[in-house]
Length: 278
Image: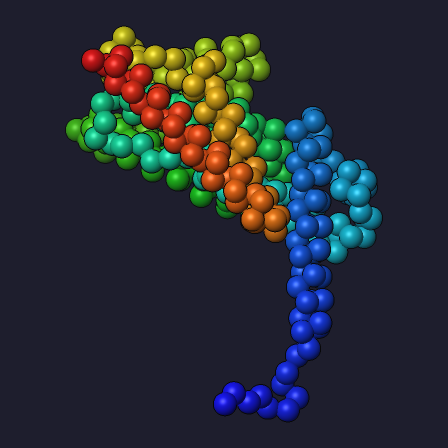
């Protein structure tokens, strides 16, 4: 027999009300972040609280109730962007042929840089005022360098430590969002051409002839790779929506379908890459 101590039972209606308030709070917080992200993507890297509130359909007081400061608001958006980046990445096999490793890494970085450029620029504007954002940027840069060292261990392993460090730093710079922005916005290259330039630069730094490295245009060209980039963006947004308290049953079904479509496209791209190498 199960008994309950007097005074410890909580009415079901009270629990339901608490759950409802928590859900509304998560949705409001997500709406505020959505509003900030939309304004940033539309070209305003530092929107005022009033503009964010109007876009989110809430009052400025509500914005301040969820985020104690502008720094906290931008930090939350940066954390969301980081989760999206993680969802868009996949391990690159360090044992694969150089051409495949190069194309896969450049394609991943191109998708991330293309999708999240406005958010990166907005975060950069906040760096002088936010120790938390600076720490997060340092962690992301360290993770990027670690990935370069893992993916290109075969090419870097025989180098002296100081030379290896210089080449890792240069490859990481070529792959960075800042370099992508220069190629796209300042040099005026289309995304596929920018990706090819990045791949050529990485191959040159690592001492691999570009002709030997090339197995097809990386990045976001038309065809399967372009569809893959679009899928990655949609998957990232769905993951973020679920984490922010969106309806997991509906969004989860969409997410599973998109991931299945992505897996099929990846297989198609892998087969095409292997055929080119053969």
